[in-house]
Amino acid sequence: MVVGPSEGDEDVSMAARSETNEEPVKVALLGCGTVGGAVARLLSEQADDLAARIGRPLEVVGIAIRRPNRQRDLPGIDPSLFTTDAEALVRRGDLDLVIEVIGGIEPARSLILTALENGASVVTANKALLAEDGPTLYEAADRAGVDLYYEAAVAGAIPIVRPLLESLAGDEITTVIGIVNGTTNFILDKMASAGSGFSETLAEAQELGYAEADPTADVEGFDAAAKAAILSSLAFHSRIALSDVHREGITEVSSSDIASAREMGCVVKLLAICELTDDPEARVSARVHPAMIPLGHPLASVGGAFNAVYVESRSAGQLMFYGPGAGGAPTASAVLGDVVTVARNRVRGAAGPGESSYAERAAATIGDVVTRYHVSLEVSDAVGVLETVAHCFAEHGVSLQTVRQAPVRDGSTEDARLVLVTHDAPDAALSATVEALRELPEVAQVASVMRVEGQ
Ligand code: HSE
Image 1 (cartoon, rainbow, N blue to C red):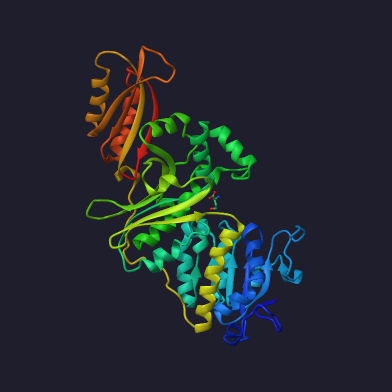
Image 2 (cartoon, protein in one colour):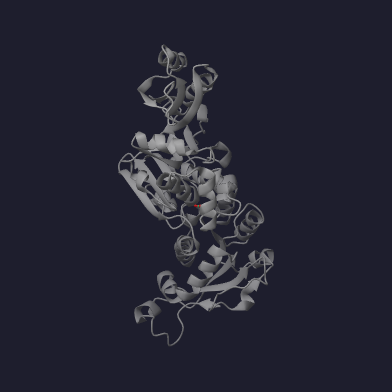
């Protein structure tokens, strides 16, 4: 199927046609699910414009699928293009470009490596594979002198890979904080607006189609952690793998945490935080965890299933990238942007930028990260309790910024709620403090513990 300008097509301007050399750029598509189907549809629907932008038509020569009997609503796609033999497709030897939207580690990794070894450039949306084995893919692309592009791997439609890799290549990035998982943002947002607990909100999100039947990858933070590995590698020109990313999901976030955040003028978000440690080594701290951020922070107003990535850099200052982070057409938009760029590179006989890992920064462990905690305790309302609690923080070298006593939420007059916010301290000291607080007889319950970010 040549998806380029056709004879007699009234919609194609003469200018576009005159720039179009008829030698097609040969494309194979691996995967035809939600994203792959949208990519196939848009390749067909937008063929003339894509050809005009590239300077040559794109020719889809095969679409690898797993389930040949599945009903697919793809008008304009020649059914003879479908094949279950993805391996044979990537081995053809005449491909210019392979689009991988299968996801997961295998067979995606083998297929991408085979495609690269056979001289095809690759566009992929595979965050898990890039986070686990990005350098292997980059090295294979480099050896073959072809492109590896992956804008769709992080935050769906939002342009963030290319801004980090190219637009900000002359700047010094200091911080990247992302809301990069729409499912968890939807759940936390709903918990805040409805005052509901995690489990019931997850069930509602599943009913509405915002959460998968198996929500583990999203709610346990695996999806966001893969994106954090990719973002921190790009931002800090280093190799940060999935195993370097500290990960905590949102399953333990309670309505009490969310109420505490509100009392502090904050909101709870699952954040992917990428920054450098303050020590002379300036290691990369990449972590995913729920955190309170002040309502005035640009990320605080990111609601529903939307994604956003906040970037701070030395010269540009504060930047914010916002938009839909998932879904067929939005993700396909990012895929097609890469397809156009890679196809243009092929037409010019050039390749775009490869991996930039020259800085070779090491990854920090979570214990070394300097952060702040919000701690809410239910304590007996008696003489000396506040002193005992404050002493526990002091013993661990953690300085308190604010201390507030509030009535307990069940209305008891014998107990009180202490809400403490710390100054910056190493995460290891903060978590040791919380462990010690749990052992104190004066502390009936550690009701809420959460990091505070973005101040
Ligand atoms: N499941 C992800 C989300 C989208 O909820 O944002 C794909 O990474």
